[in-house]
Image (cartoon, rainbow, N blue to C red; front, top):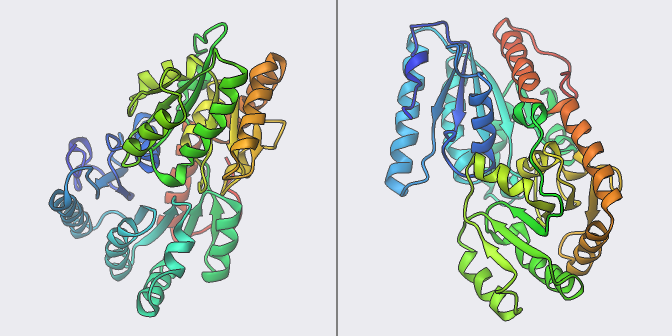
Amino acid sequence: MAAVDQNSRPGKLGVVCVMVGPGPQAQGGVASVVKVYADAGLLGAGRVVLLESYSNAGKWKKLKSAASALNAFLAVLLHGQGQVLHVHVSSRASFWRKAVFIWVASAARRRIVFHLHGGGFRTFVEGLNPLAHRLALATLRSSDVLLCLSTPVSEWLRSVAPGIPVRWWPNPVPTELFDAELDHHPDPQNVLFLGALLPAKGVDDLLQGFAALWQLRPQARLVLAGSGPEEPVLRRRVDELGLSSCVSFAGWLGPQAKLQALAGARMLVLPSHLEAQPMVLLEAMAAGVPVVSTAVGGVPDLISDGDHGLLVPPKDPAALCLSMLRLWDDSDLRGRLAQHARLRVAEQHRADRVCEALMNLYSSLAAGRTRSPGTVEL
């Protein structure tokens, strides 16, 4: 995909907002969010332009993508358009790439939406050297509105950026997940993990917990769907635990393959040590798959334990096993949790409603208005 969509080039239509982030074909949670926005039509009418500032390729291609996106942004500004800049931010390089766009937008007197995704952003900022720390906070404070994905992050943002509206913002879930029933397997045997294979995702905890479950329910199978640098380590761990006959590595799944995996899952388990507002959790909830998750980051904002899913402490394989066993044996509980979770996600996360709320926010900012701080009204 080009840095600027061919159907929404600056000057052809009135561009209200320039969105900067990974392209919808990239891997990762932020890219998943952008893809839902694109599929829902947010980027198709020429009012919102996506500039892809990140590439999954090597270092030089990453730099080239960022430079190309910045040039395209300057072209939008030179055409007198793009009253609003919407940056999707996580930590480390992602933040510094977006910081350049924020500095340019601030100099051009554009309105700035700082959309924070990464669950580790506070740790990242607080670990910077004094000069970089001051620069990061100054960049943050130059925004007009701060969107975040969890209550703990919203509280921290208010403490470091007083006076700037902070809003909890829902990640969008594809509308078709609510409009069409998945063809669920009548008696699924799969425990499903979806996500990057990284240490912070807690997959080793899951393997330990699943090993105990498998001893009690030998028909159980664990599907690890994702990719990442931890995969070789996890494959060795599977062999060490004697799980090679019941654990499979499915790789990174595209949209249709993901739906098939959800349809064949008895439950989805997210054992992360750190999260913001995980898309895989929202997708499972919308698809009617019961979930077990660690109570970290923004997860408790989405799930009330025992009502929309089961929550366990992070880094606790024994607690994971007990909750998986509880769900495995109780079909009534699985049905009740799945039903309640689906209703909760439908209330706030339908893509069409989130896109409408974003356009209202852009229009308000472009007109020189901001709403009062608080949860977004959908």
